[in-house]
Structure formats: C-alpha cells, structure tokens
Image 1 (cartoon, helix red, strand yellow):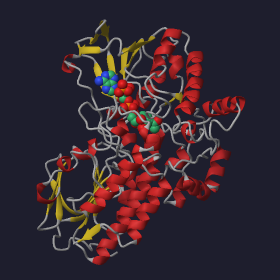
Image 2 (cartoon, helix red, strand yellow):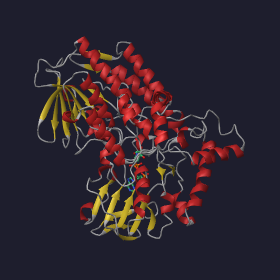
Image 3 (cartoon, protein in one colour):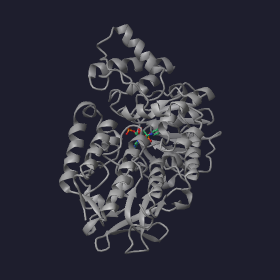
Length: 540
Ligand code: N01
C-alpha cells in the first residue's frame, strides 16, 4: 500500500487513529505503520502498557505463561527477549512493552497523557473527528479502539468518600510514585484477582491489614517460578511449536486439555489429578481439569470439596477458613484468581478479614470506614473493586456514528457487533480486543482482531471505498450467535454477578461480554467472513 493513500481529499486527516497503548494497541499501531498509513495512537496514561501501565499495584503479574503472552510477530524480538519468570511481574511486563515500542520505532507515533474524550463521524467527509482531553481534535478515516475490556475502573458508591483524609488508590489506577505501606493501617476492599494478588505482598509490610470481602473466590496457587537460562533457550528454540499450540488451544494458552470425564477414573486417580492441578502453574487448574469439571455440577463439587480441604489446611483459624470458602458459586462460575500466600496471610496477627455480608461498609469517615458493627481507622484504603468490563472503556469515549447515534444508545441492550470488531451505524470504527470478541489469553485473542482489521483496511483501500460498515443483519446474526453459544454449556452455569456478564456493576444490564468461541473457532469464523469478500460488510 502506498503512503498517504487515504483521505487524500482531506490532507489534514490521518489514515488511522488507534486508541490505547496496551498490548493490543501497540500491535495495531505496528501493523498500520508497516502498511504505510499515517497513524497516531492516543493514550490516557503517562506511558505505554495499558493494563500493564495502570495496574502497577504490588503483586500485579501475569497468570498466563509469560512466553505465551508476549508478541509472536517479530522473530528477532522473540529471540532477544528473556522472560525472567514463568508469570512475569508488572515491572517486567512494562519494560517488555517499552522495549517493543522502541524496537519497532513506534514511540514518535504515540501521544501519551492524551485521553480521547469524543469521536464523531461525519457522513459528508466520511471522516471521524476525534476530540482529545487536551482540547485539540484530529481527523481520521479509520478509528481503531484498543481500549481493552478490563480498563475502566469501578469504584463502588460508598457514601462520603470525599471525607477520607488518608490515601486511597484503585488497583486499576495505581500511582507511578510508589505507595509506602510500611507501618500503615491499610484496608483492601475486594477479593477478586487484584485483591488476592496485593494482600500477601503488603501483609508483611503494613502495621495492620483489614481485608473487606463480600464474596470469596476459588483462589488456587499461581505456582510462579523463575525461568532458567536453559529453559529460556529451549523456549526460544521452540517458539514456532509454542505458537502452533496456543493457536490450537481454545483459550490461547500453551496447555493440554484433558479429554477425560471426572467419572472416568477411580477416586484415587481423581485425587491424584487434583493434587497435580493444585501444584500446576496458573490457569491449568481450569484448562487441564477434567473436561466436565465446569460443565457437570457433581464433577464441579468433587473439585471444590478438594479445594475446601486445601483452604482449611492453609488457614489456622477454622472460622476464618470457613469465611474464605466460596458458598455461592462453583469452580469457574466466576473467573478464579491465582494466589501466592493469600490464604496464609490470614494467619498473621496483623491481618483480619471483614465479611461484608455480615458487616457491610456503611460510609467513609475522615479516619477510615464505618461498618454496621463498628469503626475502622486507616491510613490507606485500596480499592480492588474491579472494572466496568467489556463496554465501560468504549462507552466512556463518547463515540457517535452516523446521524449522531451514540454508541451508548446503540448498545443500550448490550453490544451489537460483527465479530466483536465492527458496529452497524459506526462506519470505519474498528474494535480490537473488545466485547464479544475477546476471550482467554487476551494478546492471543486480540491479535486475531488486529490482523483481521489490518487486512480489512488493506482490502478497503484496494477497493477505494470511503467507508465500511457491517449490515444490521450480519451484526444481529453474530450477536445472536454470541448469546446462543454463551447460554449453553459452561457459560450457562456462570454467576450472573461475574464481570463478564456485566453483573458486577450496579444497574448494568446482564449480558455476556466475552467471545463465546474457542480461539480456533473464532479464527475460522473471521476467516470465513474475509474469504467471502467480507460477507456482511458494506463498502461505500
Ligand atoms: O476485579 P473483580 P479484579 N463493596 O471484579 C468487590 C483480570 N485480572 O480487578 O465479588 C464491596 O474480579 C467484589 O465483590 P463481589 C482477571 O480477568 C487479572 O480483582 O462483587 N466489595 C470483588 O471481590 C479478573 O477476573 C490478573 O461480591 C465490592 C472485587 O471487588 C479481572 O481482571 C490480576 C464492591 C472485584 O473483583 C478483574 O479482577 C488482576 C462493593 N460495593 C485482574 N463492589 C492477573 O493475574 C465490588 N466489590 C493477570
């Protein structure tokens, strides 16, 4: 594709704007730059990394194997980068993403500290006007969102938060200046993956730590370890095979599904398998479990009984152990966190657990928090309260398509997309790593979108079209497929309150927000659309 091939009628316009400098946006920027387009990336954060820029709280790290999470598009990068740990920590990940940005000479195209606050499509010019928090605006033909599905932090509406005189930080907006916990009275509100990661890391530093738990989760050991030089050399030598494996895996992970039912084996074999899973790294407890653990309630209960015993063996006080055992959902009913010393942290004298079902928070005070049963004084309150997942980050961008239609209105009944990537009424808006398209290992999922989007833009330019848009029928058919598929099997048994069902945000409609398709199936579906001349896409 020749340089400046697009938007020639409007020389002030860019070919493409990418929003978000996370792992998805960086790859999208690279692809569009390689295609010779004029492109700019806008990022709210002061640096690159997206999730891995903002979530810099102590203990933040991957729970997918590092070597399966990084980029695969650059052979030299694969050979140059040494992952230090099986599950890299936030500083290492941020360093990696900065390394990639510099290696690909992307930094001059990235405008950090620049939030996109609006985007308006003009049908006469077929251009988007993207308005920025700086007060400026830019014109672009293509608007590519790479804002992620877990990036709009959710802060619960606890009364009088402005009264609190101490420090308060959301895990998803952690400050760049390190927070000193030494000798402080600290609260952590929330016990999802973020809360479970931070608790054991700060427990030894703080004077007191009070963990406010509303719902316990089925946390299991992350089992992180360093990657030796020999192992890294072996990983580098086998990257093509690793990529083939993650591409064939339904969640984009280098794991081997177990075809057996939990009822195919003797009790002894089953318990041996559970023990091996407990000692296995990260998400294998889900992906390598018996095939029916998440599908069959009896099989699920057999596994959670095993987990309950583990929790009781790790926590000294039986009443605390009891409160840490989930009662309202089975394993996989909500996205389980992975821990490193979380349960043992409650054995420390300085760590206590407040069960918010029995003793809810009523209000902030100047010194801390009032619960129904009493007052708690804190120097620091950590909100590990999650995200307005899937749609939150997209909708707060204030996107308006044809005839001024806002995306918020268009999606009032939930996302309506073709492949999670295109939206009827929003020409030339392309979404990488968004709702109804993303699942499992996020970089492996969103790279499918980035590649598909890049090919589509190339195709559109070859055709000389001014705008592309999915037909309402194509979007409705895909959306129906999402809900039909998500309604059965595993997702049918998930908790309505899970973030991927929208249920963690008060007042948010309950809709399944991920891609229901295993990665190979999503890839096949997307390829089929492309091979059929982008069936269901209108070229204007
Ligand atoms: O958020 P969450 P998260 N009062 O929504 C509680 C990914 N991730 O940031 O369960 C009191 O899971 C809420 O309670 P309840 C991963 O995909 C990955 O921890 O609603 N508490 C819950 O305990 C993960 O699934 C890593 O009853 C309130 C917590 O806050 C996703 O991000 C690390 C409350 C929120 O948990 C989100 O995880 C971290 C209220 N009003 C995150 N409102 C890796 O390891 C909410 N809560 C890669």
